[in-house]
Amino acid sequence: MSRRSEPLRASFRKFAAATHRTTARRADAVEVSIPQVGRKFALPHDLAHFAIERALGIHDGFWGSLAAGALVGGARVTAGRQAPHAARLSDEILKRNRASLTEAEVAVGLIYQASQHHAPAVRAPAVWRELTASYPRGRFARITANDIALVIGLVAETTRRWQALPVGESMTLEWPLARLPHASYG
Image 1 (cartoon, rainbow, N blue to C red):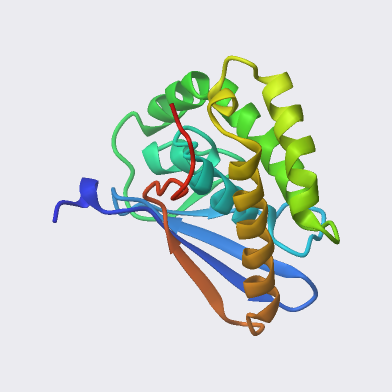
Image 2 (tube, one colour; image 1 turned 135 degrees about the horizontal axis):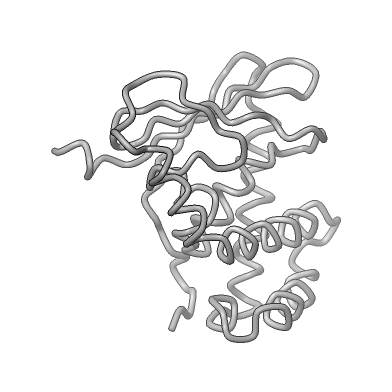
């Protein structure tokens, strides 16, 4: 298998006092470190992005941009050799994906908040309405409130898995896009 066809592998290592470290190894064998978002949540923000972007098929959000070679969100190279002109490529990817990065951030915020609600599925129609009202012609116009309910459930389950992970252990995930089994993508 060629390196380009290998998936991005993200590792989320849990430390004491609600801290974590996220690293990712891209298909080009470059490893990057992603800084922790300042606030402490039940689920690391970058892990929430991973779960939500992957489930919704957002291939040009935070994780898709990172996989393509962008240094997004303060990511920095920690190992491996970048290609010549890597900085220019990163800038081009970030410019091309600017709107999608914003959409992903909005979706992550709304869906994560809903997943922390005492009855998360009840929040799905409100989240769906807000996303489709904010982006009426975008990717969210092709999904349903039921799709959002599935993603909210996925984030709640990911949060439970993260909370159960012992300190010092890691959760490692692969990036290739996997759409929801019942999603109605146009």
